[in-house]
Length: 120
Image (tube, rainbow, N blue to C red; front, top):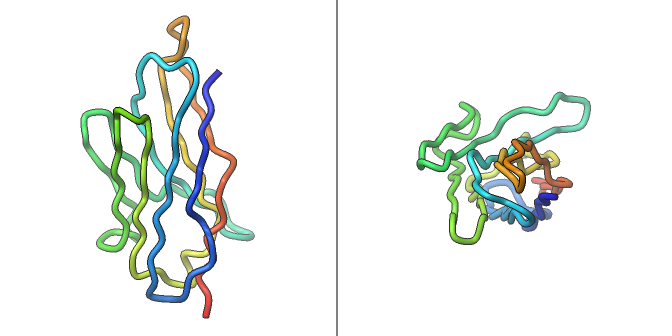
């Protein structure tokens, strides 16, 4: 079994910063992509950013220049540094990964979500 544990959400004022972390654990042989999605109230879940095992990154247009995704492959951890936060960034942020787990099973795994609220 593979699990993702997220941390770092909270309340921040507009223009502020937060850093989200997500650690993968369990019977993992290799991790392919790790990334973040978000879901605001009344809206569909949307991609924020992802990073492949080879280091390629992809960002949604609405976070380019403000958010940075990074990975510590040794720790099976992905980070999302969020700067210049706006009220419209308020959402539950979900960590996502796809891995090759024990028994050479391909799994897609989601975290439980962490709430980010941007408000004055």
